[in-house]
Amino acid sequence: MIQSGQTYKVGDTVHFTNATLPINRTRDYEITAVHPDGISVTAKGHGYFLTQEQADHLGITKKP
Image (cartoon, rainbow, N blue to C red; front, side, top):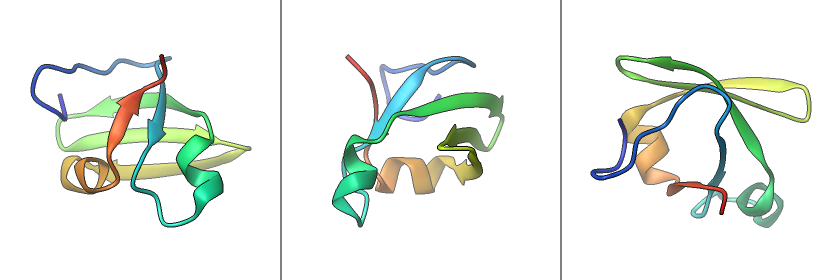
């Protein structure tokens, strides 16, 4: 969906390696919804919607 060769689905845990704050680079985000133009994630009780471009810019990666 977002990075070529990678697909994401509801329930996947992801990280954002280019996040501004160091804590947000290692925080686990769970994908709660996949949309045609982006994803919804949640972490620490807060939900966020990211467009594909935003997720790419933040360096989205699946948690190993």
